Amino acid sequence: MNKDLSPRHLQLRSMLLRRWKTQGLGPGDKIESQNEIIKFCDYSLITVMKTLKDLEAEGVIRRQVGKGSYLVKTPWAEAHWRIGFFYNRDIVGGGIFDNAFYTRMVTAIEKGVVSDGHEFVLGSFTHGAMPTNLWDALDAVILTGITDKTNTGGLSETTSQISLIDLFTDDTLFHSFRLDFASLFVDMFKSFAGKSYRYLYLDSEILSGEQAARLEGFRNAHKEVDPTAKISVISVNQEVGAEDTDAMMDAIARFQPDVICGYLHRNWRNVIAAQYSEMTKVYGFALDSEKPGFVVQTSEWMGQVLPEIYEHLANRQSAVEHHVYPAKFVR
Image 1 (cartoon, rainbow, N blue to C red):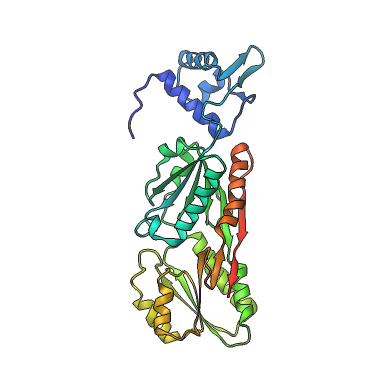
Image 2: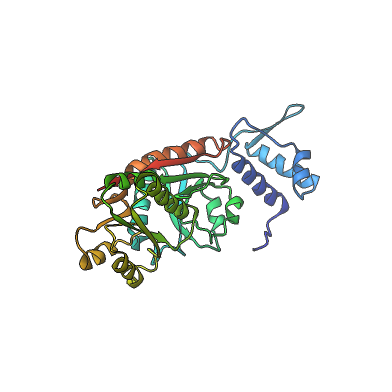
């Protein structure tokens, strides 16, 4: 990390603005006294006094003897918000626009953000590196593609508000938005209950809380609705293993399923149809698809997600919330 060579009082100014932004403070909110600032940072009393004096001269804070200090304005805030969407490049093979699922998601988010009068930024991160310095210049960051391999330590280092898309967890420190597929598995098994169908579930090799939740939802629906049905589960890589279908096709040949469901690359439906009967039903996770599957309408989904993000931005001191949205089983 590059050493900050700016004057000490400017370093402290930057640190205080970051702190107040992260805390979600607004005009009229009380801030720390100079003695309190000295306690939590490594700056001298002279530096603290100069920094507060400069901030008061700029009109950022107001100090009243015997009453304390208060924010007057927030330099980091503008009339519009800067909202970024960042995806994990390590799991999206070939980039986001080679992936139909993520392309539709980012298009829906960009359209919504810009239509609402805000600024949109698109970027990426990797399992090992997150551009937290860039995120500091944004008001909110929406992240997708976090898995068990992702180092999430950087999330707590940014002043930007973090929202996680499609992440299954109840103990995260950040707002999250995920899709409910468990109920769709129930709908699927109910649709064919009593027909002695054989179900092949394609589970993702990219391990994450969401991946595990979907597999659990499939197994639970089977036990609840049609426990006598035969099921089989195999692992696939629907991202970077799109062209490697030999193992999947061998599994299909051995198991002879009536239903294939789960994580599918967009090209696999045609590969399966070319070798097996059209009677074989194929249901993948999809956005805005007119084909059978577990489908999410992105405009409706983002129509629910973005207002929540704006509300969280307007009140950054609100409690962390985890939102779940329903998808639809299309036969």
